Structures are given as structure tokens and as C-alpha cells.
Image (cartoon, protein in one colour):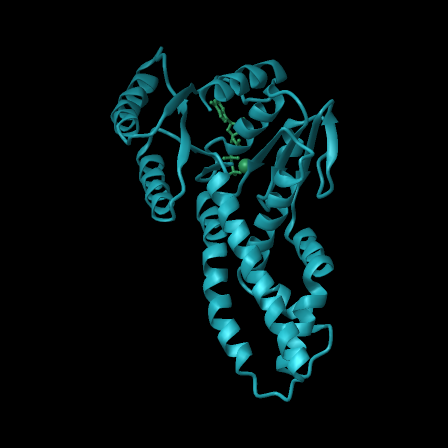
Length: 284
Ligand SMILES: Nc1ncnc2c1ncn2[C@@H]1O[C@H](COP(=O)(O)OP(=O)(O)OP(=O)(O)O)[C@@H](O)[C@H]1O
Ligand SMILES: [Mg+2]
């Protein structure tokens, strides 16, 4: 999973990695302003599409996540909601908009793809850091919530039959199990953090590292992108000097570091992307 602040190269580098790897691959973007289509020759939507032999891509939109969530969990959620109040199925649309539902189930659907056995590699291009971290915290919050909810449901005053009460409790229990499964999936993800050698880049990266460590997640590789390696004019020399200081700081964070130069063109050329992707794969 590629994480990092906005505009540092997550989409470009995750696409490069997917292009350069072999076997059956899925490139999945959960950024709600996705741009896979700009890099790949085929239009990418919220259904999987084979963009080249062995490589599928998809942009997972929130509305798609909500649809899948309703399909898969709607009946259970409705049963539980009905146990607490007199509601009809439209309650699902309301619950679906609750904060956290989309992130929780985004993770769930990526986990399902990753564990389906259909792919040798799943590359995940995420949204800018703040949103991604919220997404990664979700299973923890969810388990927390369910622990409290289970107690609450157990004490329901609404005249539920014993059987009804048991079925609600077992649904809540199965959700807790699911949230724990998602949480353990998080620990299996190989995180690639991307940043730039500038003050904001360093600050954000330190924050990401701290947050990840707090949750027991490990960044496998740090890619420092947009490094100016060669300065032919005073302007670039100045910028290079500024970068030097931050590069030193990034190299000393105790992470495995890979540096990528700032190219004079946008990174859209397939051969160049493949070369960059191979380099990333070598470092993983
Ligand atoms: N090393 C590089 N040299 C030159 N241009 C680069 C480099 N890396 C990325 N770019 C360019 O920078 C722009 C932003 O890259 P990209 O879209 O991959 O970033 P992102 O982190 O996914 O952004 P967002 O957070 O908005 O999704 C693109 O135009 C890309 O071609
Ligand atoms: Mg992007």
C-alpha cells in the first residue's frame, strides 16, 4: 500500500510497481479523486478492468463501497437495527452514511481481493495521508464500538424473543470477529511511504511514522521522490541545497530508503515507469 501526503507520487509509483511486476496483479485505488486512467491506456472505473495482460485495475468509489456493503451486510444490519427500533430498510441508507462505514468496508473489500487467491500481488494506491490513516484506525475503533454495543444489545429492553436476542448478539459477535480479521490483515500489508525532501514532506512523514508505530504497523520502504540530483543553474542549486538538509533527516529515521530523482518530464512513459517499478520491487 502506497501512503503519503498529496501529490508526492503515490499513484505514479504504485502504477509503476504494478506494471513492473509479473503474474496476476490487481492495482486498486481508493482515492476519491483517482487518476489511474491518466496513467494507463484503458479507462479505469469502479469495476475491475484488465488493462494489460495479467494486470487488472479498479478505482473503488464510495458509492460502490456502499452498494457492496448493503449487498453483503444489509440484511444483518437491518436485523440488528430492527431489534432496537421500529425501522424500515431505508435505515440502511442512513447507517451507510455514518462516519467510518465507508473506510471500514473499503478495507474489507481490499482484504477480500487480497485474500481471494486470485492475485499474486495487489497494489493499493491510497488517498492522501490523513484520510488513509483514518481508514487504518477504523478496525480498532470498530472493535471498540462493538465491545460496547454488544453489552448494550445484551441488555435490550425491547421485548425480543430469546431467539431474536441470540441472533442479534451473534451478528454483532460476527462483526467483531470480522473487524479483528481486518485488523490482522492490516499487519500483513507492506506499506510504502512516499515523500519529498522538503520541510512539509519531512513533517508529514514523521507524523505518519509515529502514527503507524503507535498502531504496530511497519513501513517497509520509504521512497523519497523528486530528489534534485543535478543542478545546472543557480535556482536548482539553491533548491538542491534545501533538499540536502531534509534528505539527511529522512535518511536518519531508521527506515529503508530509496531515492528517486525529479524527472524533467511527467512520469507517463511506460518504459520509464517499468524501470522505476522494477527498482521499487527490488527494494521491497
Ligand atoms: N520523480 C518525479 N519526477 C517528475 N515528476 C514526477 C515524479 N513523481 C511524480 N511526478 C509527477 O507528479 C505528479 C503527481 O504525481 P501523483 O499523481 O503520482 O501523486 P499522488 O501522490 O498520487 O497525488 P494525489 O495525492 O493527488 O493522489 C504527476 O504529474 C506525476 O507525473
Ligand atoms: Mg494519487
